[in-house]
Image (cartoon, rainbow, N blue to C red; front, side):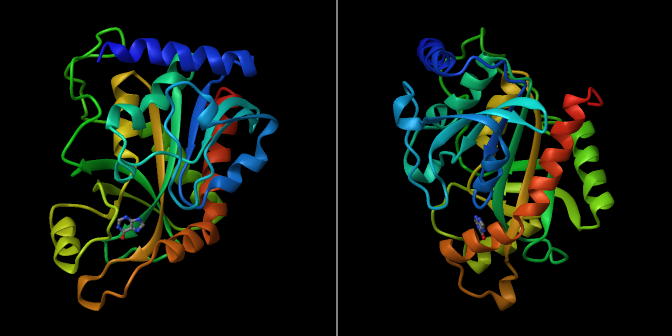
Length: 278
Ligand code: HPA
């Protein structure tokens, strides 16, 4: 997709005109975590609709702007609201912001999301650090002609989530005395939630949680050589034999209630990066 390089440059130049920081990390705030943006010092807000080639955020619980500034001492570009396959955007466009943040200089991407718990030990309101994923979106953001300047044709996916970051996030949860799991995220395109038979299948193939985001961004982040940390909030429990109906509103509320856990881990990891303990 050689056309992407020009779009990346145009978007990155536009952002640089508005904010002259040198970001070290990109943060994608998923459902319920938008509040983290209020912790950013000296924020510069840039609505997505002003940035060349950016899609617009249409999902509930997603505001739709970049917040650039300093978080836990680290210069960051934060996406307050992300894009999803179910909004109808092609995957290369959903993931364009990751490439733009890379072009601005980040080397670390932190991603958050909401998910349904497939693992019977998981409870609503608990968090899981992603150790691996299964892509059932039936497409990859890397489909099409590969631009070798952006990354390799066949990128390795044996360890998309940085082990060191996973360990550090889990250690912060232990210190702060809340439960944090480590597990496998299954990505479906949505927007409907799953049937009981589908939840059963997803558990059988090794999923601990299921959601509708994150994997496209992570694939692109790995493609362009970023370290990745991703944290999921379990907002509903998907036990096929006792399944209750699920709504988007319920999920946004559950994610907000557990927000402090994700926030604590993200701020803790960023502070370690600031202090060179990464
Ligand atoms: N399925 C898919 N995505 C989700 C769910 C779910 O049960 N909960 C939150 N996001």
